[in-house]
Image 1 (cartoon, rainbow, N blue to C red):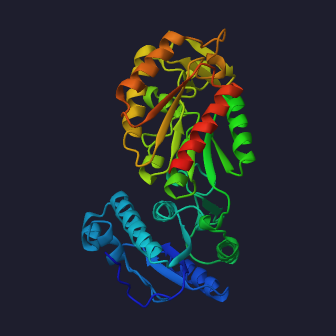
Image 2 (image 1 turned 90 degrees about the horizontal axis):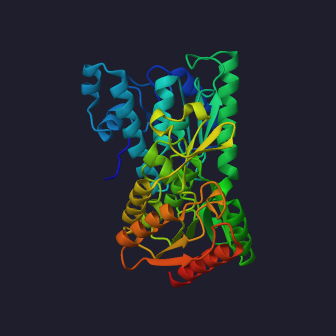
Image 3 (image 1 turned 135 degrees about the horizontal axis):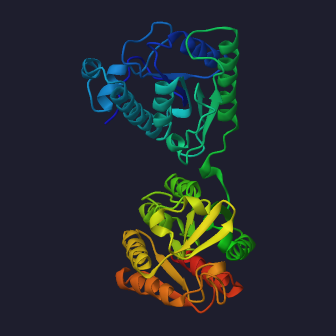
Length: 415
């Protein structure tokens, strides 16, 4: 369903300006003028529920944004619920922008606001893929907004003063913000312009040796290799960029974030970990790297229910807990259910000599009995068309790395 505008949209790709034009019209008028003076065409989206502006053209009024968010604007006004309004307008703006992007109307996006305006702008920006410049001038720019930014390449710019009218400081910030988004747009290199085939690989301190060797072998073959640290946001970012079409294949050596999601560790990447490649239909090689551990903070932060478990201090601020047999059975089933949905070939490689550096023979987490429960669970629940390869080595050996790369290259060639 296409979104109809209140005024004619520019023919060329534009900078989208999104925000509450009811209470911030003076600020947005200055931003709009700055963008026009810098030679950009602008598409404007009003997310303010109490009114609009006549200081500049509005292409999408709040009524249409609210409807796309699922609630009529009059209803939002009657409810007088700020939280509900922010949610609806954020969702509606995201849908409008997604439609504009499909129509090749979006080259960049800029937003501005206080608390509510910031959350709406960030929600709207989430719909755009990596490489489309995204900038938000915000009173909250120095706060932790990681939950609202997620894996997206959004730039936050402190407003310094409140976004509540123009003054000698706000003019400088807005003008610089306009110049920044225009410069980012002009400097942007689209993902589809990259030459080498790109492969994403996941890494952790306990799999570094393996990943370094895999990266070396793949680069020697002419591939671009992008590594993501499996500490939660790393896995989220890899999944997000996969959905944005940035990779040709995935070498997921370090799936430890799955264990943290199961047990409440600090490195969970959320429930969508290990789903993007399957949705996108790109080949993937999966290794249960570091599923022998769950990550917590300092020892005194480990939940009471785990205090009698096998714990290991990896660093002063990191305590590792050895996963047990039941957890590994669950992890095997969970991973299998995700991979079974893949639209492209998948290979799962099992390191029989240990899932991590400290899971090797003679190391603190070495426990082949527990590892075998994971392997049995994977074999039980994986579809028959998913190839399982067993390697009689620890994950951090040259043999294992070479086998992993060989399997990936075979899948790439097949697909």
